[in-house]
Image 1: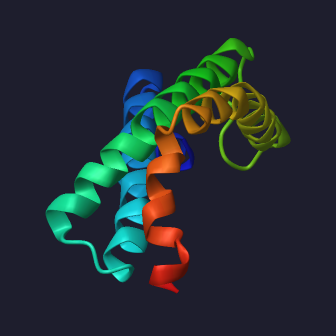
Image 2: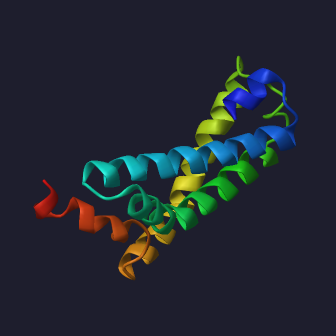
Length: 124
């Protein structure tokens, strides 16, 4: 959001960039952990896709809807409290909405639960 807004991108381009970067960085962090635990690149990427896809998608959907719903937030610019306050509020709302999604996934052995195999005692 910050990059697109600071660069003067359209709202659509800014949201698209934010979504792409959320997935790239979300997957990258998971792959990094999996690789450090000794998993192959192929297995690490598959694990990241399984662990993070739904969570990131829900987070981004809610986050971007909230930001777009606040009048003037996207046009306010990065030097304003409206922009940063909206960004922080959107992140907080998205977290609250995504938390039960992640709990549901973990409860079924999905989502971040697939990462448990690389966090177990054998990998410390």
